[in-house]
Image 1 (cartoon, rainbow, N blue to C red):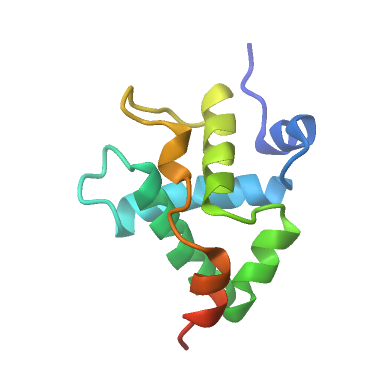
Image 2: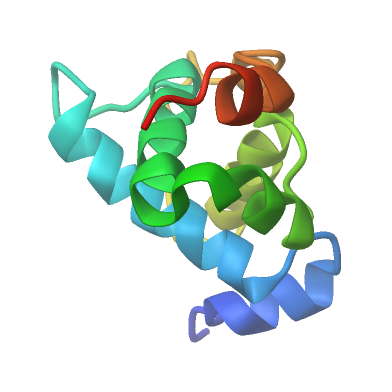
Amino acid sequence: MQKKNLETIAREDGRFSPAAIRFVYEGLGFTAKKVADEPRHVTGQMLCEGMKKLAVEKWGRLALLVLKTWGIEATRDFGEIVYLMIRHKWMSAQPTDSIEDFDDVYDFQTVFKEQFEF
C-alpha cells in the first residue's frame, strides 16, 4: 500500500490545513538539528520548543495568526498532528512517547505575543 501524501491526510482528517501538517513535519527536522541533544529521538516537549523557534523564525509577530489560521491553537495540536502522521507512517514514536507529552508545554498567547522579542 502506498503512503498517503500530507495533503490527503489533512483533507481526510479535516482538523488542520495541509500547511499545518507540512509545518509540523518540517519542524521535526528543524528540531532534530537545533534543539535535540540526541538526534535520534525528539520528545514532545522538544518538538514544541522547536516549533516555537521555527514559527518565530518564519513569521515573527505573525506566528500566532498563521498557526491559528491553520487550526493550531495550542501545543496539544502539534501532538495531534504528530500522532496523525505516526498513524500514516510519516513519523515514528518510542514506547515512552504519548500524546500527553504535548499538553500545555507553553501558552501560545504568552510566547507569540506577550513575550515576543524582535
